[in-house]
Image (cartoon, rainbow, N blue to C red; front, side, top):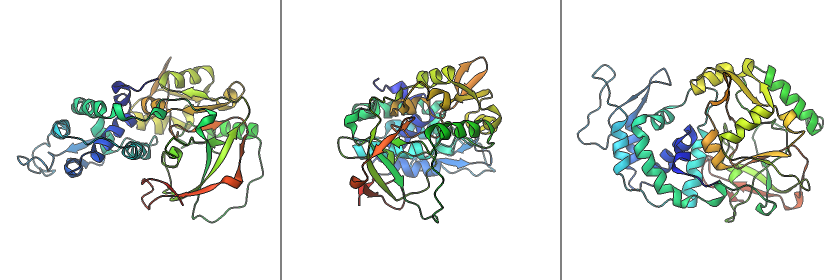
Length: 351
């Protein structure tokens, strides 16, 4: 399904992508300096004071004890009239990575997300979206195939090694994950358990998106990427938009309200009876889950209405990643180490 301007504006991750892309495609760095001078957070993360951009010579900073600060319209006006360079594939991936990195479904949105959601920003972000659309890579909206050279990613960590856990079957992992989703207070993610097999595609230019696109990452700077193959005939369920996520929640509903309501209420500003897919039940009928980039940008971080006072949040997902409910085989002999810079958001390269 082709990505549209509306797709990039409907959710917090799409809007943040556009803001980050604009910052990358403005060669003089005027926007970045203006943004730095525009946002001042208050103690309440949902209330942000906007000062006039530093790039506006008619503006003057207003102290917290002075007159009320101007609205976000001043930054939006600057953004709308700022020429943007043509985005490269690296610009698009790293802007997406920044958006994913700042997805925080356990607390209210940060200042940049609040700014991007401000009504005054709508027209300016349409301008950025129209600039970006012709350059979006096809894999952002495509399902995966066996020809996409999938890999299993294992991030390296400096933590002290822990004794290996006893091996578990996929059924045991799913059962334990279901129990945790219902009973473990303070959890915010709606993904299947981390212990399940997961793969990322390799794009036509050799990039492995899953190295960069991680919610709540740990600043990893090295990883091993091992070629993988799904079970014969296995095909993932495609989440290419909010409708697909809602379908899963309705087909396989799991009430997680007790464990999620405080965090998802705060993150979305919505009060509802919170539900997520029951992955143990889903695994009886489907082979895995693939979230396209389009599906992620239109769904992640939003309160998705299921009807009857119920809602769900897609939280913790890797755009374009696949989580499998079936066994995956790996070719350890062809495993390769990849590295990135110290900020963990730069491009990854083979070591």
